[in-house]
View 1 (cartoon, rainbow, N blue to C red):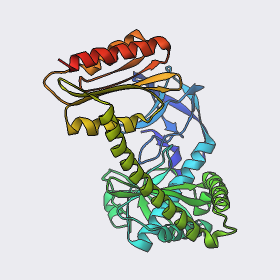
View 2: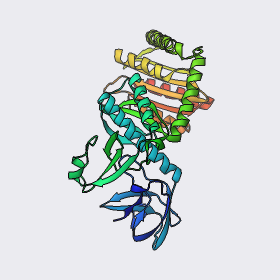
View 3: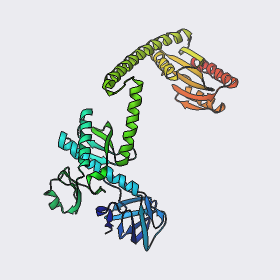
View 4: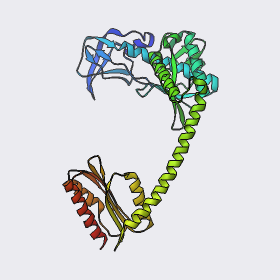
Length: 400
């Protein structure tokens, strides 16, 4: 079995190792070593970037009890291993920071962590229950207090029977050997990841956001240098927001922000009412501009600008009201946006075929179904003539 040097020496970044085997695999070659500083991804923690025998390590994972190092070419003999030390330190800080944050939340609010991950989108934990803003700030400050106490962190392997006798937070996944990470006098958790030797190594912790996901409550956080950088960004963002709201300090911020939200809600309600009124008005307008053909009312137009989404709502309302066909071409930024739609019927023009053929002839793109089609073609005198010809052809078919 490969010696897992990162278990007891997570700050060891360089070492010599002997290649025990190297076999072809998906993505390159899988090398097994007598010892390694590379953490195999898992448990929510990714592996580090680094090199093996001068070759870039593309991935490291555990399979059937072996740690596989994926490299682009075969290796053998004694090789030098090197990992990105800065990346490892950040992983250590975020992983131990997660233990501290999860323990604080469970001890203070009785809410447990169901999963923890260190991802590019942001390290996060997922909780069985939600926390309000005041509770989140309290949890953050309690975690920072634990960091400041610089409590020793111990790791050791136990048999399942020995681990069952320990005061372990959370469930223990069955294994022949169970690794427990203990923050002295504060928390004990089963975990295979890399951690700082004491809580002070985390340096800082900041809760950066929350999000309900799949029935759980996700809490994003940062630790170490990432937390310090995020805190600076947050301070700058708060100052910008205060300046925008004309707040000299945070005392009046909540009231000013609540007033802004209330104004936004009022404007959104007003916009919704105006959109509804505009819809009724334009439905009446296009009813008056339509002509009656054999299969129902028909309207077509080349327009200078317009909201395609709104025109589609108008068309849907008219087509639902009675048998109709509406064909629009809207001039926008040197293009003609096409929107053709009609009511469902046993017979009628195939609007998708019209748009597809027109786009093919005018170097555009588009298509759709017989009932609804959209496209885009370059605007020109020739393309407008082609559109008008399509309007006429569609009208003839709608009049049969």
